[in-house]
Amino acid sequence: MPKVEHLLYGDRKVFTVSSFNRGVGLHLGRLPNLWVEGEVTELRRNPAWANVFLTLKDPKTAATLAVTIARRTYERLDLDLDEGETVHVAGRAELFEQKAVLAFRATTIERLGIGGHLLALEHLKRKLAAEGLFAPERKRRLPRAPRAVGILTGVEAAARGDLVATIAARFPPTAVVICETRVQGKGAAESIVSALAALAAHPDVDVVVLSRGGGSFEDLLPFSDEAVVRAVAGSPVPIVSAVGHEQDTPLCDLAADARAATPTAAAALVVPSADELEAALRATRRRLGAGVRAQLDRSRGRVERQGERLRSAPPLLLERRRSALDHAGARLQALSPLATLARGYAIVRSDGEALRDAASVRAGDALQVQLASGSLGARVDKVLP
Amino acid sequence: MSDDRSFEELQRELEEIVARLERGDVPVDEAIALFRRGEEVYKACVERLQSAELRIEELAPPEAST
Image 1: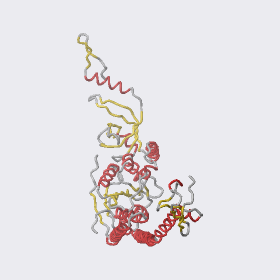
Image 2: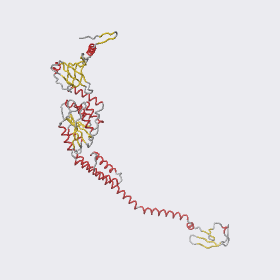
Image 3: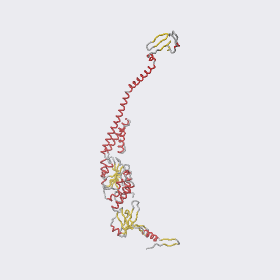
C-alpha cells in the first residue's frame, strides 16, 4: 500500500495523484460509522461481482449517494429490495482511491419498517401541524352546487364507480372531471401532486375528491407524503379526502377541507340532492309570491289611507275658516262705537261733525244727539267752556 | 331564459330577490318586476335540475415531474 509521500521541487511540496487520493482516503476513513436513510435506486448485482452496488436518493432534494456492500453480506440479509423503497444503511464513507470516487461502504441495510414509517409520519405530522396546515380556520366551505367535481382516483378503481353513480343520482346538473393516476408505489406521490394540480386548473372544477379505496399501511403512504399533504393544503379549490377506510388517517385527511369515510359519503358532501333542492326551491318560490303580495297589500293600504285623508280635507278646511271668521267678527265688535252707545254714552254732532270741544258751538246752535237706539234733535242752552 | 351561470349562482339570485321583496322597502313597480324575474329564475333552476344529465370528462393523467 503506497504511503502518502511528497516530492520536493525546491520549496514546493508536490504529491502524486496516488498519494493525494491515499491521503484523502485515510482522512475519510477516520469518519465514524453511522446510519443513512434514503430511497433505493439503481440496484446492481451480479453473481460474478464481489460487491452489490446501489444508489440512495434523498426524495426531497434528489441528492444521491453511491453505496457498496459485500455481495455475501447483502445475500445474507435476504431483503429482496425493490427500487423506491426507503432503507436505513449502516456504514462509513470510503474512497475508491484509484479514481477518487466517494462511496458509502455499508455493513448492513434495513428496510424502513412500519415502526420506522410511523415514527417518520408522527414527526411529519407534528411539523406540519406546527406550521398550521391542519388548523380548522384553514378549512374552506365546500360549494353548495359545484359546476364540476374533480375526481382523483387510482386506475380502474372501484371507488370511482361508486362516486360517479352517487353524484349522478343526487345532482345531475353537475359534471365530473376524472383524473386517473398512480396512487401507490414508486412515484405515486409525484403523480398525485400533478393530478391534483391538473384538476384544480380545470376551469369548471369547484371541488376535488381524493378517492382511494382501502389498502395496506404502505399502500396508503403516498397520501401522507409531505408533498401531497402540502398540495392538498395549498389547493386553490376545496378538497374532500376519501382515502382508505374509516380507521385510516392519512395526513392528507387532516389537510383536506373535509373528509369522508366512503366514496358515497364523499359524493353526498360535494353535491346536494336534487330532490331536496327542488323542495327548497319551491319553498323559496312561495316566499317570492308571499313577498310580492305583502308589498302590494302595503301599497294598497297606503293608497287607501291617502284617499281617506283627501276626502276628509274640504269640510275640515271650511270649519277652520268659519272659526277664524267668528274670531275676527268678535274683535271687530269690540272696536265698534255702537257697543259704547249701548253702555249709555251718546255721540253729539253739530253740522254732522262729532263734538269734542264745547267752545266750538254757541248758545242756540242745533245739535244732533245719537243714542244706542234712535237720535234726538236738540239746541244749546248755555256754553260752559 | 338563456343563462350560462351556474346553478348555484341562479339559486343565489333567487334568494336575493326574495330577501329584497321580504324587506318590503321596494316601490311597487319594482316589486312586480322583481317577482317576474324571480319566477323566471325559479323556472330556470327547476329546469336545470330536471333536464340535466351528468357529463363525464376524462383528464389525461399529467406526467409526473420526476
